Image (tube, rainbow, N blue to C red; front, top):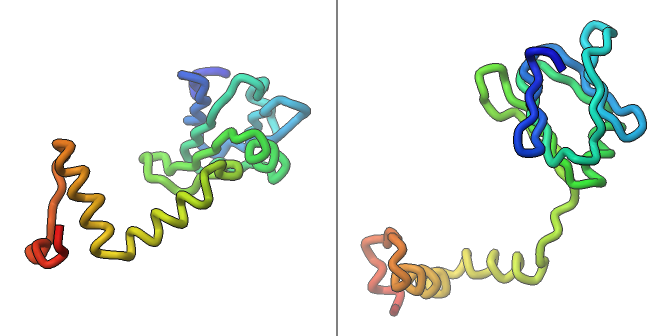
Length: 133
């Protein structure tokens, strides 16, 4: 892919600015000024990180999302801009419980105390004794 694209640990890094990413079958095609820079099969990629003013076709982003291949867009200086990723496959009941616990000071303190007892460093507020742990 030339001197401006790298692949490490199933991640494709696009470091050349102003590249457009498109989909052709099961392949990613890199274009710059309508010129094809390269083409790679997507079957072995886990993520793509694009630096600069990179664009991506909606078809490509949908393809990635369907297969849980993440695309991360960064500035040329490495500041995070956006990420496209597929559906989260988490436990909805667990997430709801975690949300409820995070809003309850007593339950939050109990969880924090158990973490603290496990030799993790946890900061408590000055009035943590009022919680009753």
